[in-house]
Length: 494
Image (cartoon, rainbow, N blue to C red; front, side, top):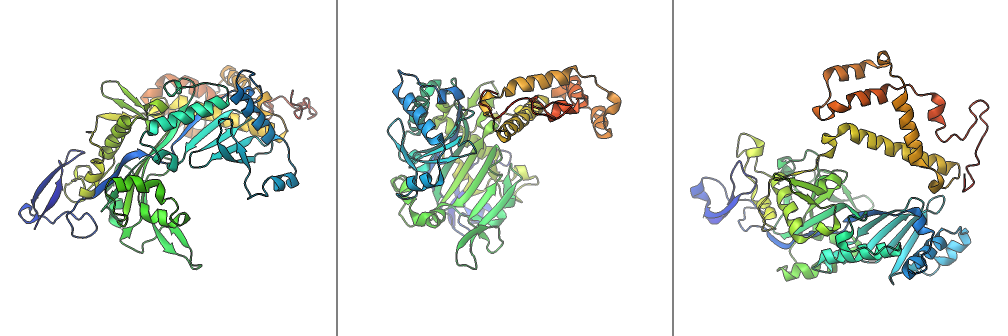
């Protein structure tokens, strides 16, 4: 039987496609569908951004309370934030939600949004602009996060312009005029993207989980019927064919999800989301009946930064860099590094032939993989990363302590307190004999070469003796002798 075979260089990351006779080649035809069929999977939606693509922007808290007379949009947003944060009784909340259970407000740029308010000081505001974005705002800290919705992203062929438009709108709420090209310089940072491609004629088997190279956290999910008659997602071994394969987790900088998209659409909102993708699929030959499988690449945090051998960077944390060309480069690189192989075709797993189905995934973009590496900031500066994480943990504790005492977070000089604590640690005398046995062995064994210069500082911080009352009462709120409160932290000016 003559069929379409996919072969690859055992040492390469991307194979070549040839047509040959399976019998003369001495092996079985490629099993694309879980059946003995030869037609390769067909891409009906090339890699593009999907929902859960998100960005972050931080503004000064005073921007949310001070109105600029010459900026009407900003003034209207300040009034909206103040109105939402105003204390309400339960009866008032019920009256507002009587017309359908939703708290709806008109945004300064004209959109209508479903609004939710939470937090002990009503500081957490969420604006859900239907079919477009979720915008969450911490009015105490000025931390603003935007998550784009799939329907808005799939409604246009120019996704970059769509992202740029919402960067401009959200920035204008705070009185700042920002173009997409200047967004990263003004503090906008992409914190995660979901890049997906859709295929017909593509399915996954349970044994594929162990044949995926590049990630070690793997699992499968199937849809099963519970005793109550409802569908529930769970891990199971009921069938050879699986509906979902997770490679990595959402907490990872890089992860994959391979799943049955049409099945997911049918289960979610009784198929109401189908029009989001239908026009794109039909434009690329979908007949409306074939099962559609999705391959989803999720990048977050440091996984969004790539470096080439010649020193150039592909920085996807910059919103202006989310062009179709750059996304294709990221897809090509990740599909070559993380891949599905045919186990047993070579003595070493990393040299095994690439599975024919994964070749179709690689060819969803017409871009050859580049020699790039993803950013490894933690490995390059392990000590600095530990210090940054510890500082964030201390800052969170300070905010929590201030909230428990009824103080506004904006009035607490957290950075100043951290600086004072760091000075105290740096000036403290170090008693090397006080080190525990485990840390002594670590020092004797040597640390990574990248942080050799930081050994002395690390030892000083870990070995410093700090007075207990300095740690228990970093804000200086209590008299150390009597325990009496010295500062009225319930006052906004405390």
